[in-house]
Structure formats: structure tokens, C-alpha cells
Image (cartoon, rainbow, N blue to C red; front, side, top):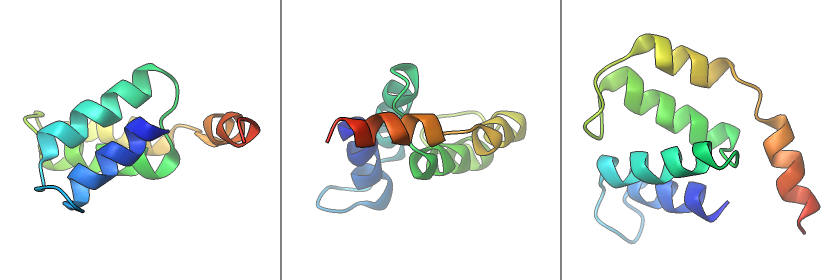
Length: 81
């Protein structure tokens, strides 16, 4: 969950300089560990769609991210509380 939060901070530029490369790095780490939230996936999809953060624009990758089910990830995170 912290990886998604860090990605959000860099994606939005909240308290840090806006940096899409760093945001993509944190979102990708969260995705690889199975902790990507639906909101973070949407932002990562936007990066793929627009070619942000040194990504090559890839509408197919963006669509896959937006269509995936992240409910299981969020349920698992809630169980940690």
C-alpha cells in the first residue's frame, strides 16, 4: 500500500516535485508485489496511455490495467488492519 501512496505523491506532485518516472516505478513495484489498487492502476494506465514516465505509449497495456479486477488486492489490504 505504501508503494501506491508514494506513486500517488509523485504522480500528483504532493509534497514532492511531480515526477512521472518515479510514480511509474512505485506503481510498477506495487503491481509486481500484487498490491496495486484500482486507483493506482488507473493512474499507471494513464501513464501508459500518454507515454508518461519514460513509458512508450501503449493503449493496449492501459486497457488491460483498467480492465483488471483489483478488489482482491483491496480486500487483502483491509484484512491487514
